[in-house]
Length: 440
Ligand code: IFM
Image (tube, rainbow, N blue to C red; front, side, top):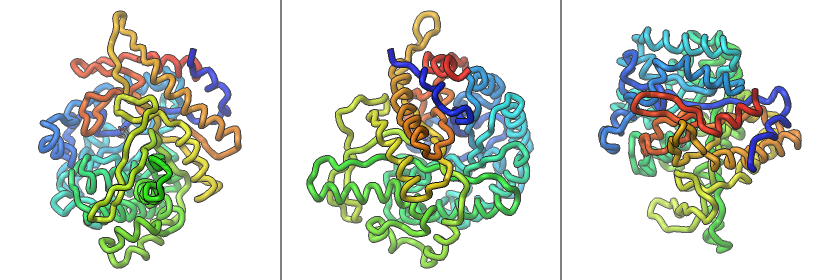
């Protein structure tokens, strides 16, 4: 029987936690929250399926924090909603929003959990889209101001903070593939945002450093790319995929440069002073967050813009997102950060988990055996890395609750806890109890 009994083999100070994000759980109809690009995208592209209600975490947050504590987790990763703090403009703060995050942090700390806030997890206030959102560096400057405000207002309640969640999603997925808000499909917008989102990170780091002595990180989502076969064209295509998806961000942050192949396609769209800005982008951080889910099989495919590849999935066991189980990729990226980028930096696995077609059965039990297997094989990779003395310091399961899974609405369930979206009832799944058995 597959289980998580080996959790007990992790060092005592290893940080196990769960992760969520503001738009996915809070519910925007509560507490004077303003509109974000996701409300607009949902209206235009997702038949209005949005995060208005989500999990109503705004009213249920105490119950949610209790669930985290009762499972034996020690940390909680969540994000601040920019439109909740500044709904109408960049000056007038929403006191209800401030009050909510104060109470949330107080509850987290009262329950002896470590708070791991993220400043930006995708809910950009809609007003910025008028100046083309992340395509304009004005947005980055305002992001610096937001970071300062957050550090000043809430900074005594946490030690670690991350600036941005998954810059690849904010830029490429949302401005080249058009699958996330604002739903743009154009290489020029994509290139600009690939750089600007990192520039925004630098503005945030600068603001945070000027205000407090927090340990600052950024959260990157790495996806393993494998050539579909040994054909040279496919090997080259995989290199480009890896540079666009992964190395663009880690090379910029740790080495202050962009990788060659990707740069040869994107450089013409970057601002003239991008190299000077890379110096800021690569100013030191204190920890790195790694989100990992799956691999892709890469095949050469000609494209007029030079992005000559397509992603395919293989024949391995898949999650409800159609993503293959490929745990080897997780240890691969841990080792890559450590060996190729910085052999000292503490690494946190800030997200890992799977969507499963969970159903409530009689007696309210949810038998998500596949999820237990998923955690089992990924956590074994993490443990191997820990045993090899790599500086992996924590692991956050994605996610605490079934929630708003972006373009998929409420149809994909990632939670350790089942959410009944009709009445906001939370029902722990078997995977939740499996963690509890060995963490408590
Ligand atoms: O739900 C998302 C999360 O917001 C960011 N990382 C990937 C998760 C699953 O798709």
